[in-house]
Length: 136
Length: 364
Image: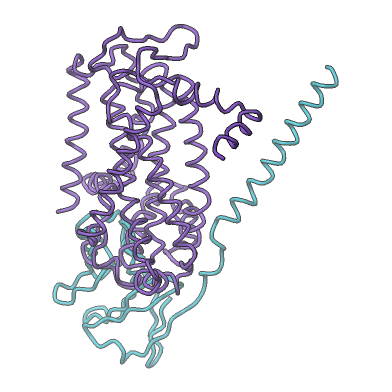
């Protein structure tokens, strides 16, 4: 192998190594920082949500809703529709959650009743402690 | 004075030869028609977007707390801010329309056929870059419409197995659309996409000039030029000079483009700006009946019609691939679509389906 060819191969090798070594930092740089949205519980007063009513909250940066149902007490669900990310609205008279974008309908358990959503709404743990309700 | 400048340039760069070979002596087909000017109109539209975009950048603040207010200030407080904002917003719609019309006319004239396959592929990518321009620019005013339209669009990749959530998260810079998304889209809109479009345009223009302008299959006076087994430039010795004949027609169409733009700005200012576009983004309230812009309606409606989101994305990706690589699928030599009834029927079916899906998506 002559000197020109060796130098050419070395340049290709060096260029490839440089490109590859930059890919991982770039992917990590572009991915959202992890951990920023972890943890974080939300505490509200029981009196803030009367039986049959609801309250909008934010749990770990996710818009959520707490509903005080007559049958099962407090339920906390993500408001983010699992279809395309619009926020569902609580329809008290029909005891359901409706997505205004493409008509996805969920029951108060977060289960899909009709429409295009592929999976149920995310559920948050709810703990009643005295006068307070802890969500998340 | 002009004479002196010309002489000075002549000595240094051989100006007369450039003018003779690239303008006055460069011949276009004798039966060339106005549809052939649409590529130039699209280029003029892009430069108009660059110029008005630059003016907007002087006052626009790419931050979720100030973006909406800054756009409102541009519209109502900055002298003639409304003009440049409207030129940019209406221009984006007209630019998409021009590029789509250009692709349609190229399809109808059969100009994608050998040896112009790569010219088509570069053009198809330019259409996708133009649509990405619109998508990234849509979020920047940080209105209810832009926020929720972006939420919907960035949710689509989440259906891809395994990597979907990572792609959606990377696009958004987090779980939800937020200030991080705005920063990302802003960087993409003002740096990445312009460079990419200029790069693709360079390839496209190089191929057009290197191979030569294709002759329309309708109203030919000379026998059709056929590519050989080795490279050959398609020339038209009996055609018209590129300058002044064709350039004048191109300029006429550019003026028509701006006439349409100013007509919309003057008489239909809310055509592309519904109420939700003038309401600040509220990440905790989705407005009812949110719809994407007209050029995304067929994709949106198709996605709604197919119950499985992954299948919907898969079909759209397949259609996009068919569109990009169409010259490698339709390899028949005959370029006159009127002599190919099945191709004509397919062309009509695609256009009609596109219109139906658009109208359906708008009113469903």
